[in-house]
Image (cartoon, rainbow, N blue to C red; front, side):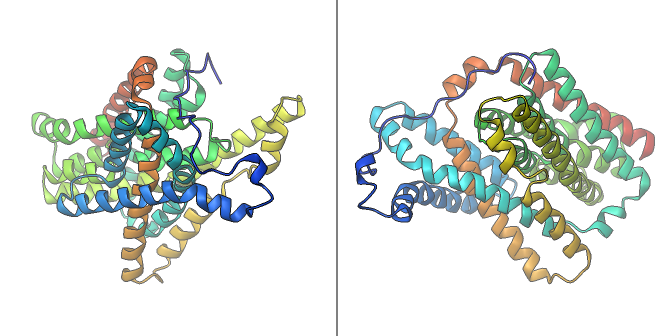
Length: 377
């Protein structure tokens, strides 16, 4: 990491009533204790997912991951205001942590079934070049700026991935690869908040700029698809331009998502090597993590396998639809869980440099995508 690490977000530390004491180990099985500890959080995440999916059904322009994250942050803020609320938040933590980890990874795998390589390749070399240039420049530029701002590398990597690829899903996938010890929940929450804010601004600003710049439908679709974060935000922004721009933007966005797997895999390999070097140097705790961490996370392998299966044309449309709906539910539950871990007061106090990094990353993605779309579109 580069520079001093930002203070971590705090989690409730009050004891959970009814939780087994150390002396109870011989009276309850580990499975029953584990189940008892996780069900409050799992139930809360399931209820939140139902609310979010219902809201999305009523207002389709609302992004499921974004809405779930915001709901989690609101609930966390309200509960932290009172001791009794902090107690309730503490009881949900084990189940919410389980939902955040496993829900996100399963959702990323199912996301692969929504991608078809022939559809992406239909963009042609010009469109694919626009996507590649935008993604690599945005991610690389964000990492360099994060180093200049003396932010932890994990923070810069999560922010850069969110703006370069596909918002919440990309942040979640990258976190799963580079944070095996789950030490950067605060960094992930900050990245998720930033892609939410700037992606929402893009819905309003980019269609207006398309008119000001006099861009045609194809170039407008390339620009929006290559620069806006969430799928729902891309649909809203490009749909405000024209149906033709929306068609191009949707495929361009899918091309960005395809790049998620190789980038996450490379980051996972780099982190694993770094931890192994630390283990060889005798750093405390690094040896255990290095031994158990896979160079390429299994959920990334699953994502790639799902893309290949979908590209072969053997997956029925009904299965694709079911996978899409299931991934939405999983992302909703997982991002709500991540929102519960956010302490807004701590985020506001320590997040000035991170907000600046997010603004710069959003501006870089927008400018590079526009230039590439004008030159190659």
